[in-house]
Image (tube, rainbow, N blue to C red):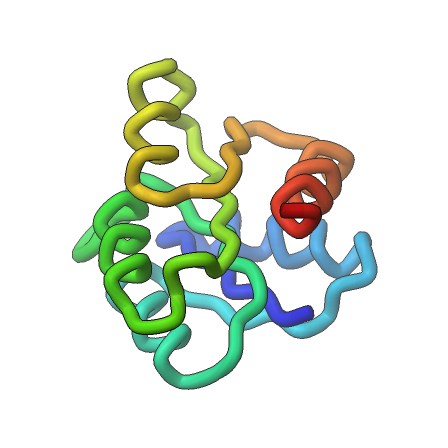
Length: 121
């Protein structure tokens, strides 16, 4: 399974990638913002996207809306990992097309649980 991790923070990308590796996932591509994320999705197969909300150039919500507008990407699983914990934010993300939502800080168990839930659909 191939992951795309989209986050402007190099440190947060490293934390997420290390978490994925601990869970046994080794095929991981990175992007520093939504625009780079769209490029990575266009370049090759991605099975699940983990994205931040707050990023420069193209934020997570704009990224998901652009992704959902791409041919064949309407059902690509997206997990949003963000500090935005307000109920309105979660609702906005779900409306944009996010499949599941994780509030930072998170544990590896939480990430595993959310990946399993997204992939079960």
